[in-house]
Image (cartoon, rainbow, N blue to C red; front, top):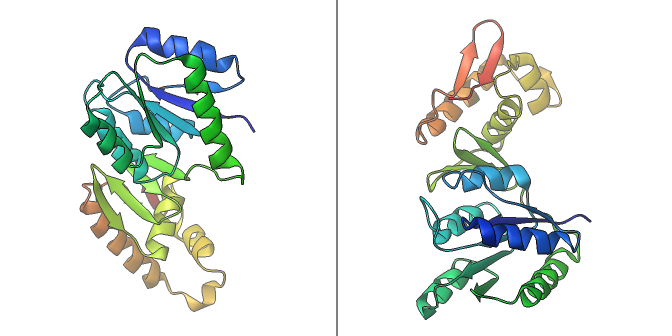
Length: 227
């Protein structure tokens, strides 16, 4: 199984040094291009382990740890020059798997990474299946949508409709296609049922300021758009 390590580190020299060392052990290493959108890169890369500094541009490592933990159980290791005990306590309370102080010995770090990967994926556990859409995170396993620390729960039908639309973002999905995908037997569903579900879905999306992100194409169907 190929393993991806996601390193959130704004010190280019440290990032490149870690990347070079870890790739010698056949680990794929990546990181965010934009430190304002760490979650977008995390969702796109679907890493098996995250290494994160505390002091970062825009938002600190604690913020991104909370965001990741809201949708994923992926292992997280903090790498930081800060040595205050409270930082370590906060990191562990937020769900970090380890806290390693800089400077560190690369071989020791590698041993910890390998141990965590073996422990986590020995039984084939994968990272959470999530989608990103207009700055929101859609958790496919929990059936919730989250944006800026606000979380909205959807019913099974509402969530399924949203997932179908988002997976075809900026493409029209017909009402008939939605009905066929929602229910095995269309004879027990009238057209109004879908309309009711769509209305409720839009009301909940409005709580996240995404009410205008699902539009109706008259006579054609619905479309999730990129705002």
